[in-house]
Length: 206
Image (cartoon, rainbow, N blue to C red; front, side):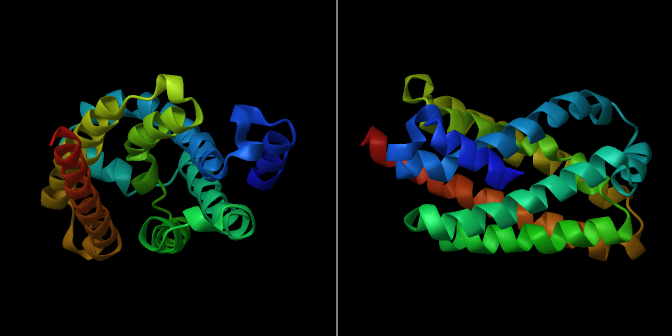
């Protein structure tokens, strides 16, 4: 699916990606973050007002949408690495590219096997900052670095930490190893990226 979308976008030069390698490297991220953000906006009001125990029950459950989002995101990771190696290799970074994608391929496959795909669905709104960033790269006139930083702090640090702690303190210990461990790694990665973002903001302000 992503290979076909990318091929069509490049052929018709959508967002002028044919002559711009950086934009090509962000096109698939724009597609997947759009899909994830839509479902994230839908599910966020529902889970935000759930009782902590009901929230844990939801996260540790399976659903058609959860299975769909896991499968689509795995397809994105595989497609982005393959196409990236062929068409925008200089923009496939080690941490944000190879490590990130392979990690998600493994974790989401395990979520599908264990039937807890809502663990991914429940955090789909985390892709909203990626959507904002990708839109700014594909359409420079819409670029807003401040909005990206604010959305990153709000969604990937503050809200992520809130739901992380709620899950941690109300989940049974026998399920923590398959859920809290990978989620902890994601949270630490978000904090690491935030530190880099703040550093870049300070450099711009200097």
